[in-house]
Image 1 (cartoon, chains in turn green, yellow):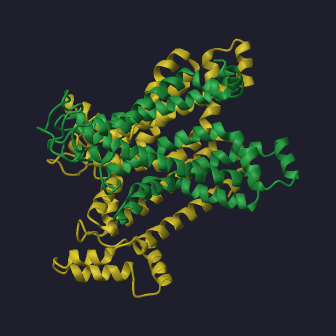
Image 2 (cartoon, one colour):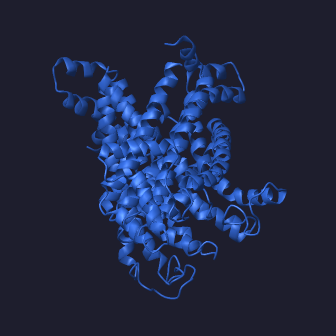
Image 3 (cartoon, helix red, strand yellow):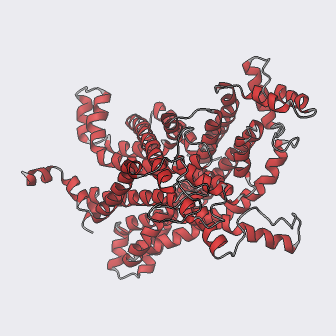
Length: 287
Length: 329
């Protein structure tokens, strides 16, 4: 039984036995658990006065306290939740847009339709992302999680569209695709069943990379004070630290720990991606 | 002109038109009334209201039909008339931008070039040496995963606070003023180093990873294997792989400039460095929309110009593109 399963899902087997994937996924799981259960074990509210200010990490305050006596651990785990949520939703939207444009442009490769879609993509590629996001975010007085995600995703999709397009171009002249085409199967079904399904592992890796990118873009916006207008976020925690001269006062637990968690998460996802690359790519597999 | 450059130029021109249009459309589309809040802020200032109203008629022309407003907006773009700043009233926005842009170029240009060169070299080494690869790759991944402003925080903490070698705020000390004296130049460089180093570090990781992957790919190609069987040295194989791998890295530079400039905005905030990014954020926080629009357009123009520059460089190093340039295909 089990053997049958692994024989059928060979890719999955190679993925889950890859050391880099195991190592990366473990860290990712820890950070996600921290975001999910951290707010439950935190003893304070993120905006409440939790004790003396300027305290380094201790058993009472895992990550110390801010200058005005707020608990950094509480703020970090709440902020992590918000940043991860925005990043995940934005990453999903960006991957979807990128894939749809990439599939369609690739399938109609060489036509004027493809040219137009690629022109659109190339325009968004050179547009400086953060500057555009600042202009958009600055004029929106209320920004919720979903609005944030849409803003971030709107500039994150172009490279995915390009990458997916070139993959589609190489797949679309395969014999089985031609067979589907002469069997007059609809384009959407060909894209779905012949092309998308063969690129599943690739798209999954694209999603991880998108997630990394959108989290970075999100945290930068939050740091500039243009994150969600309600609640706390990782970038906001660090913005406070910088504004209150937390770094100059040597309060590394306030200015550095929140970002460290995010950086470790993104590094771990990179590891997962390189591991998956080796697992999905038979040429690299034997190493 | 070659087909290659022509195609790129068209993209850049369209991008610029779209950027200007976004600049034009966003204040008019957004909920709330930025103009009313501007006017009310100015009513207390002496003579402010008249000047601002003049500005508003020039830039917004709200009594005219929308297409006429749009044409006027373009006119102001081409005459560099971005209006008058509110934070530094009554300095024209263009003057503020002219002063700030020097600091951006001083930090970004060396940081981009140096990190590209060093990152590619380091990546090539870890691509050919398994031991170096295992030791250095996690470090490069870590660098590439860091948000720019967070790396700035770490750099400030270690070099500015713990060791105390470098000043951590501003572009020059409070006792010096900009002049062409050794004193000022030394002070400027002293302040310049940490922002530069931050930008350098974060980008370094990305280039190293990219080149390492390219070298791995080239190593599995037939010509490398053939060279290996002929007993060519590791260095020789690496050099050939490097020459092939460098082309996508140049394209990658064009793709990334926008993100790097975005990162620079946040780094300038941490260092309180008076470049365009710092100006833009000040403008946003004080609802200085004229300044914000001016800075946005400047950043877009700079990024497009940089992209075009990379395209020209690419043309010279890729023989295939050079061919299309001379043969006019």
